[in-house]
Amino acid sequence: MFTILLFHHFVLVSFSVLLWCSSCGILNLEMGDHQRHRIMMVSDFFYPNVGGVENHVYYLSQCLLELGHKVVVVTHAYGNRSGVRYMTGGLKVYYIPWKPFFNQSTFPTLLGMLPIIRTILIRERITIVHGHQTFSTLSHHALLNSRIMGYKVVFTDHSLNGFSDAGSIHMNKVLQFTLADVSQAICVSHTSKENTVLRSGLSADKVFVIPNAVDTEMFKPAFEPPSRSEVVIVVISRLVYRKGADLLVEVIPELCRLCPNVRFIIGGDGPKRVLLEEMREHHSLQDRVEMLGAVPHTQVRSVLISGHIFLNSSLTEAFCIAILEAASCGLLTVSTRVGGVPEVLPDDMIVLAEPNPTDMVRAIQKAIIMLPKIDPQVMHNRMKELYNWHDVARRTEIVYSRALKCPHQDLLEHLSRHLSCGAWAGKLFCLVMILSFLLWHLLELWQPADDIEVVPDVIFHTNMMDRSCGKKENDRL
Image 1 (cartoon, rainbow, N blue to C red):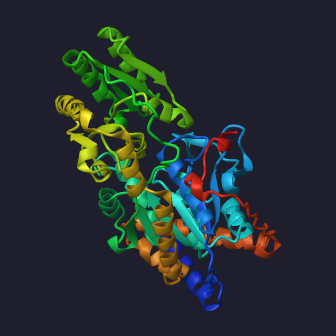
Image 2 (cartoon, rainbow, N blue to C red; image 1 turned 135 degrees about the vertical axis):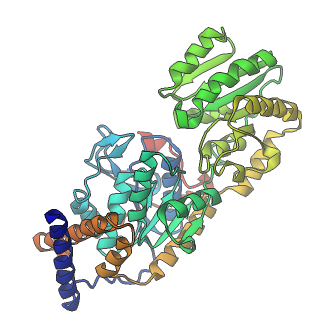
Image 3 (tube, one colour; image 1 turned 30 degrees about the vertical axis):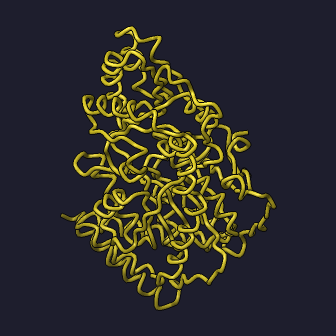
């Protein structure tokens, strides 16, 4: 009881201090108007790691650079890759010296990131902070610290999450805290938008749907389509439970039994790979199931163009860029009907199935019948019209402009929003905000913003428009 009274007393005293600071003008965090956006992309997931979020951040950044904005990316160190690096098109990347803790995400420190985030914001004269992915702790840190200092923040959610298990409940509460006073939010599908609004309690008016895209210059059909003497089904995915690796273990033997002319190529690695190898041994399918292991993104096209059908067995998916890459290479797609997948492709380019082995086998058989009607080049041309990174960048630019027009909120308004996050969680979130605010002002006293050197803008004159906002081959050096 004494602890509870002490906690309430601390919150009341802190509010009194903040009211005094506001009357003295200390909380005046208004930022000036800027015609050109200066954007800081933040995520734990970036190159040299490979995945959908990594591709999204890279291509979006390249196209925003083409539109005349300044873009820097902030991520954690990857092995020996630490410090500041420049990528294609002059994209500047801060690999901060923070090691991943779990699944490429950094350890949550609440206040530990504030000094380095503040320094980057001031050095680069950032106006918009754009965080990516719910599971990126670095993104949550940056959004929290940035809005304390008065910056406009935008968040993009790339995945779906549940509501029942302990991990989902915990993650949803963190997301509610992060998005309590976010300027604008972006989701990659309408299903993802509904999921994010329900999980975070964010107003739907603040959430925009901007899909992913594909580099159609990189993913082209083969000059000579593969022979149709046999049907080659390609699977490129992380071999984990969420991606439906357990479904593949049941689908592949049954389909091989029903269709003697079917062969599988499986690219990817993960903890479920051993189940697929055991299945292959048990059913003696070594000559019909080829396991490639992890496939570098630069080699994904060469794997895709060797097949006729792309199989996606995910159990949950907000969008799935892999489907776009396969369709751009001219492959007919068979996918589970989950999440935002039904929104991705027109009905004549994809066959959907329920996430169970029987329905998936039936869908693959239907796709095999459809194959003679598929023209890879026509499919590729349609993908050029449907999905383009330049269009994604222009739509994101509109969201940034709307974010800058959002009214300024002082710390007291931030705290009032966080108090509504729950009886106890709201008070805890307010305490974190107060401590962040006090630490920020201690940093201002210890190292004033005027003492931090502003870096000059470096403009690289390259013709990126004909290369779909940049290639990635040189970025892996």
